[in-house]
Image (tube, rainbow, N blue to C red):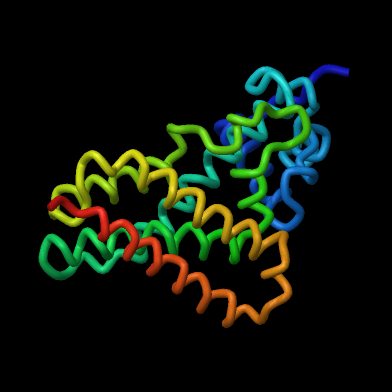
Amino acid sequence: MGDRPYHHGDLREALIEAGLTLTRQEGPEALRMREVTRAVGVSPNAAYRHFADRRELLDAVGQRIQHLMVDRMVALRSGTGDRATQAIDGLRAVGLGYIDFALGEPGWFAVAFFPAPGSRPEDAAPREAPPYRMLVDALDEMVAAGLLGAAARDGARWACWATVHGFAGLATRGPLAALPPAEVRRQARRVVEAIIDGVCRERPT
């Protein structure tokens, strides 16, 4: 039987939106090409004109989720104060936004940052991931404000990324998940403030 024609706009976008809906609660395992195409109202063959396989569609959904995480980070910035205050506020927003998104959307967080079976290890945290770029930009602001030495920037980015990613993982699929939500968020703020203190210790002398 041939594909039913798709008359509702951009099929690629519709497939990504369906993928977002399916994975929001259950994570990457919930994304199956047959379920996605059924939700959109086309045959599976239609999807393969836009995505070579399930992995490619899952990657596209994950990229969209990462942009949603960036939106959360941006929303947490106050945009007030002098240059140093704004730089610290920006780094804080990146850390808290990352963790807050993971806590609020654990299914999407798993899609974006935990590889599905068959993935390569480097697929989990690509250097060009939008949240990673936000972190690098925030550290650049810290350097420009005189709060972080330029030579220490590269080491700081991995320390920051590993810390917030590790906390988010423990809080969504590890022992911290058993704590009351308010306590998890209190500890998240302590972790992020500790990161900021550590970064500021490496200011130029």
